Image (cartoon, rainbow, N blue to C red; front, side, top):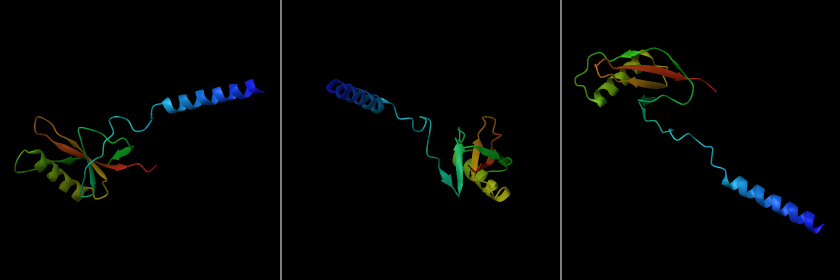
Amino acid sequence: MKYFLALIACFTLIFALISFNKKDKGLPLASALVTQVDGLYIFTDCLPINQFDSIGTVDLGFISGTQYDNIKTNLIKRTKKQFPEAEGLILKLKKNGLDYGIPIVFKKQ
């Protein structure tokens, strides 16, 4: 009986050590908190982890300046006007100046 209890104690200890040594399987390393502007989640050089549907595209139109903030503000305003149901905006910034945005809605889970 002593050996049986000792064997159970050893297995319990081994199980406990294995359980504590497992790595946390939380969020991927590439996860981030996304900035929200005027109710839209803004994704620049990235895509949402959650599933989404694209509901159109938004062209840049005329802006005064080529700075990121001007481009972002313009695309957000156009998205809010053309796609009021949009929950997010994926910014596509191109070197040739043909920047545009992709308004998205998240799939309900």
